[in-house]
Length: 113
Length: 115
Image (cartoon, rainbow over all chains, first blue to last red; front, side, top):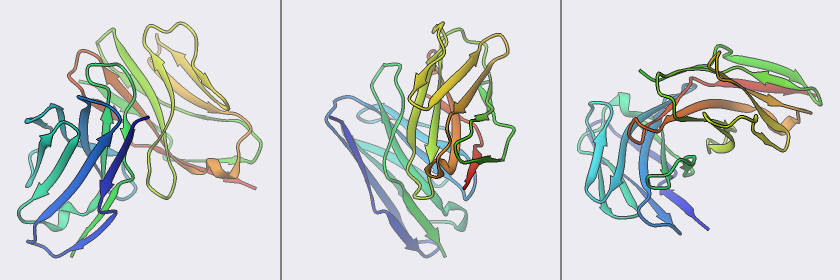
């Protein structure tokens, strides 16, 4: 069966510090991968998605970036965090080219102080 | 543009009663999928139910059913026999098959089940 893990679960960072959130999927190959952000009490905002290694599509211009160095690994990064980057970040995957649902990781709660 | 609307920011329901959470969508594409997710206070997103645009029957999964009215572009979630554990945020989402790999989410409805 397929599983998805993301870490860290909780992160408190000062403004201007770097960020790295990591997500890995197991039990499938060539998944579509996604990073979403959820502000407190709000819906989900798609940040990045990837259909293959090195292929990243950005939906929202910001100081965040994403990379997919391996087939089942998706990394969200920032060189310098802003206060507005605080939120709940969710990694997700779906079957490549399929019509199925999104499967979500446990989420990472980021607080920028 | 693809859009999901959930007009109920919050809903209350008595335990053991049924509740309907509204969802309308906007797309000009003919092939799409509609999803409902549950997000408890822990934050995880739990997939509940799926309806394809070409499915003629309404989807059902246990106590969850999706009332799909294609002409009205609505995909309401019906939860029967509500339980205290159903208290959570509920998100309606759409995936348009010819629109890359993008899922669009609604703003969510917070459901509170009262004992």
